Image 1 (tube, chains in turn purple, brown):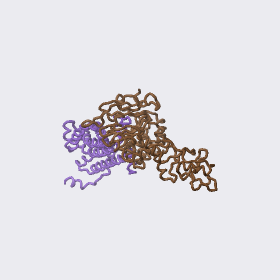
Image 2 (cartoon, each protein chain N blue to C red):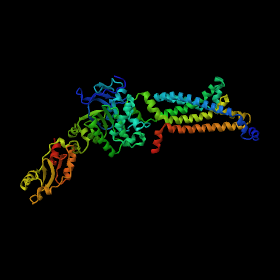
Image 3 (tube, each protein chain N blue to C red):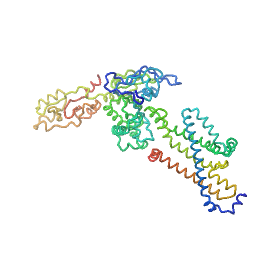
Image 4 (cartoon, rainbow over the protein chains, first blue to last red):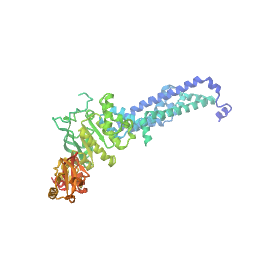
Length: 226
Length: 381
């Protein structure tokens, strides 16, 4: 209540502050993108390995989803609380947290994507002389692509949101603005941080939609004729 | 042998060994199965022949097919492909030399028709120009419009997809083609057309084709030879469809080939294979007495008119003896068959034409006639 009472007197946005701090805002946006990019990139690499291993060795899939499922369930603030004593107020702590939240979504989508390859397509490929690695790279993964990209889209947008929480351990992109704004009762920072992070998430989401269409013309045409 | 060479292809007329695929006492028991899917099966597939594998479900026909390209490994026995021990060749190398067509086609949905057809040449490392040339050739060969080459599989009809499947299997010109119910998923009209096209293609290509089907009529129509399998991979009879229809080896075969055996056989014998009768014919210059003598001899009320080997037509006996010359009353035979037509087609002509014969010509040249009696004799052989 005090927060609202104290901020009520101020305008929602002080344009003068905005003008004076343009450079800071841009660098925070870039930091936000960087934190997200690293998290999704590393998360994707780990997920690919675990997912492909799970596809080849089905017994591994249950434990893998169980473990990544637990990671996904831990509330983010609690997770960062656990991490700080171990790895400190570092970018490492931030990324460990962010990466661990991407795994479940990405692994599930990669496995589902590869599973979606029709049995007869796989059989035809093998019967024509494909060996396992080439089959994976040229047939299974391309066909799984729409499902994999759908996973990346959810993981990325989720991570953009989560990065604002990592401001609690000093690396938080636009989250820092929001945090500082709340702490110093300065609504301009809160508004700028919130609006830009929402905008970033929305633009990323749209980019994924456009990107998916460009990458999978065959799926689009299929939809057009269906 | 370089690792990307397909299983070496010898020309069809190689006199060394007419056998392209040899299964020698092959058996297969799937893990956990009580009874073998195939027990002690021996079969030989000659170069350039279509062999159809037919039988009820559970007879192991698809298993037999997949043993050839080692999608399924035998429990025991030997498998030879083109004179080589198939079990000694790296499976993927063996498969590069064996075309494979399945009912669900299995086209790659993310690749265009062109890219799908180019699959095996691509795996073999052909250069781009050669691949493009080959793809264009195949698109034509299987009767697709060239505009379809850049479409995706989902944009094609079932029949078109199966054509692409056949083109893809033929792309690197493998000597062996394995087909598992290739026309099972298309409607009967398209199926019939695709069957005819396969036979037409085969006249040119002379591949060794193993074709699995549960449809006895398809097996009879397409097979140079037919293998009838019973549950558990027991070979009940192996031979030319005509022989099997004439002399079913046992009650199982008899039941499986079903009714109308005689009619089915008629569809397998061509007019070229039987001896034709010259029939009741005279020259245009013949007088009434001569014509009546010919009619009497053949027991007909009409006579054919042939001039220098060309069949002009026929004349009613009742029209003879009038003043006009014979030629002016000649009627055309509406239907003339060729030696390539079957006895079944001849029979249809016999029972629907007024003259009760089927006339056989090669172009304009008159070869003879077929009667009901001759067809009966041919089938009774």
